[in-house]
Image (cartoon, rainbow, N blue to C red):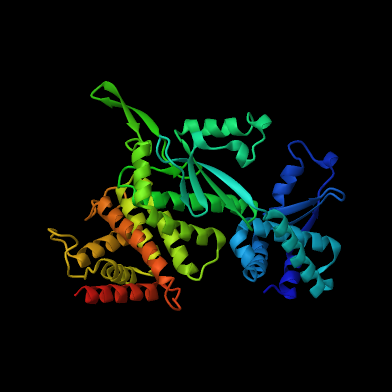
Length: 451
């Protein structure tokens, strides 16, 4: 909770400098060069007086601390305001207060007034916002895909007028949007509405939700077919790459097509989506929790969303070592593991709870690799790559990226479906360890029933 003392301290740290008259500058100097010399990280100008009020680097921690105190007592700010944007607004409010009074005159009503102004600012900014995000999934037209709050739709079927575009303004709204999509071979859009979130955070949240939605699709489509699916406003590879190579004096062109889903027809895509509806509906529930921030099991819901995001990132990663590190991060995030030992333990527990595979079982019929060895290789690879004991650029890892991708995929799918069941139990506990314990008990009960 923010205090009067914090506010007084911050006001005392605000520096007020009078800008020199323009006619006093020598050649090569102007107001901008003077302002740079003040070393302000944040500043506000008073056009009437020519004064600049700002904070220098050494005083910024006071502002950040005060902003955190204001933010942590209001869940709306924590969820709905990007921290940098919130800090800027707090600074603006404090500057306004300083121009009206001095630190010695600050009383409780001043802090209350500042908090009321912040609430009014957030209320004004956090109106419902509908985002349209261009994506590359498959080149062909297929049926709409609904994933909770996110709807994926082929651009040919999208109704811009229903979205709210003025038909008379298509040249300056729709045309540049479509041209950007065409340049990146993107033929799909994701529509999502965000409420109770200010604009900067809203755009950020929309992008994250679309990434998680794409991850859900990548979970149900066979490996390798839409691994490059992405929103083109995020991290995506160029769809087409041309290169020139000189071999022994002979120059040869090389062309690569990285277009997502190019081998997947619209009809087959529809069939895959229809058959995986139970998984996609479950993933949609996780996305609803991400967007709304409301769930009785929010920690577990967010663990799945964070894990799905890392899975999506890993699929698009060109370098195998980095991809494997990201896949293992996806798994570790899913079970809230804090270290390699805990990660190993929880993956083994999940495999036993979901697939009835114990540490000494073989990973698959006909395989010579035991579960405990496979899991150890997965966890070790990530740890050694990220800590620099194995080379990111030249190391040959003990397992393939497809193997680790398959493990991450199976655990993500099982986790979300099991979470639906867990939520219906009496007084479920919102912790990964309790959820894993429940899965083990359920698996043992199923085994006993079958026997």
